[in-house]
Image (cartoon, rainbow, N blue to C red; front, side):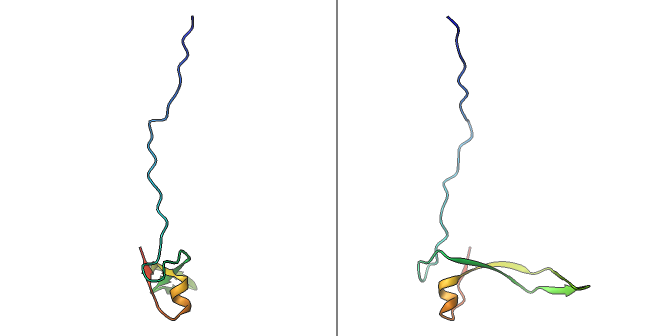
Length: 65
């Protein structure tokens, strides 16, 4: 009787989490860059920020993560 090897994955997946706004509980996000400079006609530098779309519509700036 021949034995067969069954390959199992040893890699464990991390649990995924949805990003949620603490104020409005919305899950729509916009990525914006702050402090971008234009050097030789190209945008360089800056810091990426995630903003809540729902709060941004109301005139509030809520940064996420």
